[in-house]
Length: 166
Image 1: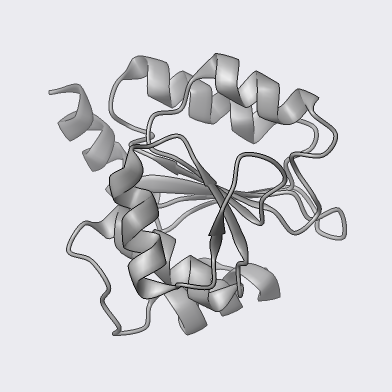
Image 2: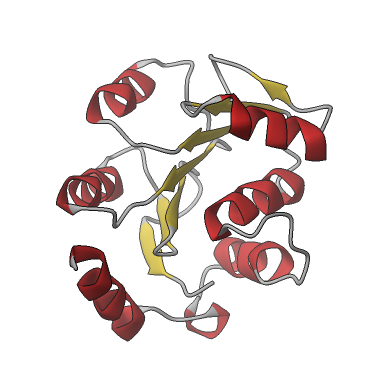
């Protein structure tokens, strides 16, 4: 029931590419997320795979089982699945301890790193973790897509938060 009410609230506030005034986010939406190509039936995994392609990701870190890593390798054999400094970090289950570890390590997050978090509206705890991320000083852009959230650390960009229907 929690997720249903969160989804209704999300739909009332969310927009599409026409409500976005950031060239970086607009380009990401129109040239990546809104393209017709479909890699996976689950929206979050489809967003993950499209983002790997769009940002030319070479190194991925994930806290999920081998299934996600194998799926990434099937679509992108040249992508390395690593445990240290990655271009994209995918967290199927966001945990405060893991996020604290990622943020405290100076080598974990670069300016061009993408943090993709699954199930940000699963329950109140996940929603609180998402809100904490949005308020983090190192975070410049967040994109709430209900099914997942994308976090960017671009120093050259103003801090902005988007709710986007995908």
